Image (tube, rainbow, N blue to C red):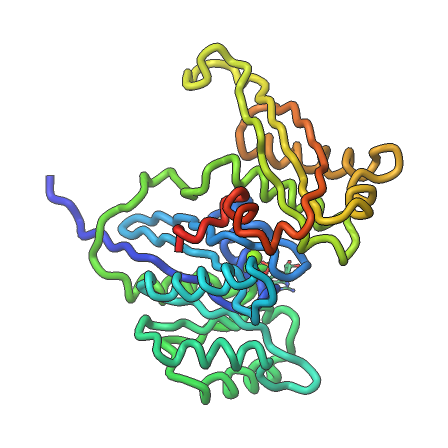
Length: 313
Ligand code: GDP
Ligand code: MG
């Protein structure tokens, strides 16, 4: 049997926090892999998601936003973002148009600077076009065009899906012949435990006050099916026991996360449970705990403990 040519490659997604990178990933992959939140810097690890088409496979790397680091965790995030650029066959650099005054954000100037030596083709995705007037969009396109030679400039909306296929098509155009790295039905190489932890963290971020989120980490301590033979695909889905610990930095935070009579923790758990059940395709029994670990963001030991391992760089 003659095999058609297959194309594949790694595509890194960069951009300031909150511009819509995770939203685009979710749109392409159609499942909740990368966590979307309206608070910046919620994506900590680079999460790969995989899009397999008729004759191509794109492995996306959703990096944490590049920013100026103030803690060890911040430092790790920046390093891992820059490293992902060099691995890539293409880079999607996502921005959102600025309003009053309309000019390139300082953070974007820094990113553009860091891209100067990058040889990988860079596609500029101007996101959130559903929120700007046409003339303002044209101004933004013009301003960015003057900063560097982009392979392509694509205005789009990750939320409505407008013009996102044009971006895919453009990327597909630079892929070289290559292997199918992952089975075609696989959409991520992240272990389910980690995605479950991210789901719980997302719910906590959504419901909690602004001062807590960056000091939160979630560890899945247990994920075990009650089925006799969990690998039997024909068996009825059995309950999966999931244990999760939410780590925060202060006793006062712990009290807020638990809430009056445990109400907040219950709310986080209930909403997370639904998403984790979707993820696993089985009902789950979720138990959550809250623990205080002071300054975990500045501790090498604790960072490793939560899976932010320097070796991964
Ligand atoms: P990230 O930090 O770059 O990964 O950004 P997220 O994907 O988490 O998105 C940040 C916020 O922007 C979320 O509230 C999204 O719903 C919102 N957002 C993303 N894309 C669009 C878009 O095209 N239009 C609008 N109006 N909002 C968007
Ligand atoms: Mg994100």
